[in-house]
Length: 233
Image 1 (cartoon, rainbow, N blue to C red):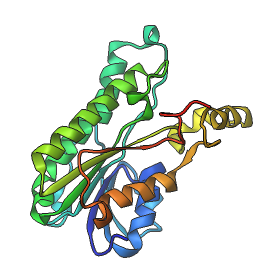
Image 2: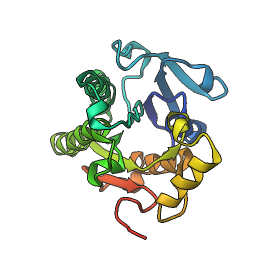
Image 3: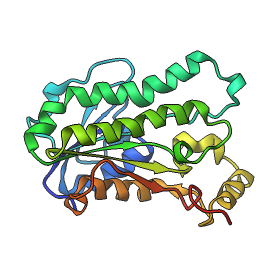
C-alpha cells in the first residue's frame, strides 16, 4: 500500500485516472490535473485545471517534492489506414506522447527531489500484438514504450519509469465499443479470460508500479490484457 506520498495524476477525472485517484486518495496527497474537476469533487484531492494538449502545467500548485507521476490521457482511434489522415496520426501523437513529454518535463525537478520517484505511462496491447485498424494509436503508444525504456535508463536510480499495456478496458473512452450487449459479448469473447478489463484493475496495477513493492522494477511494460496479447484459444 502506498502511504503519505505526493502523487500527480494527469487526466484523473474519468476512467482509469479517476479510479486511481479514488484508490490512492485515502492515504496520500493526490494532485489531479485535468480539464474538469467535477468528477473528483467527492475526493480529498487537489485539482488543477489543465489541458495536456493546449497549455503548460501550473507547477506553482504542486509541492516541492513529488513521489509519483501518472499520465492518463489517451485515445482509441480505430480506423482503416487508408481512412486515417496524417492529421489524425499527428493528433494521436500529440495527445499520447507529446502531452506526456511536456507534463513530465514540467515536474522533473520535483520528482528528482524525492530521490525515489516512480513514473507510470499507459501503452496498449496493440503495440506488441499487431491488430488491424490500430495503426495510429499503436504508433503513438509504441513511442510511449520506447520513451519508457529510454527514460528508465536515463533516470535510474532516482526515478523509476514503467508502463502498462492494457487491452480494452470498460471506461468512458471505450464506450463506443461497449455500448450494447452484442458489442460487450463479442469483446469478452476475444479475450482468453472471457471479459474486458475494468478501471479498478488497471488502477491497482498502477498503484503497484508507484509503490515500494515494485522498487526493483524499471523500464518494464506490464501486460494487463486478459491474455489476448500472448494466448490463442
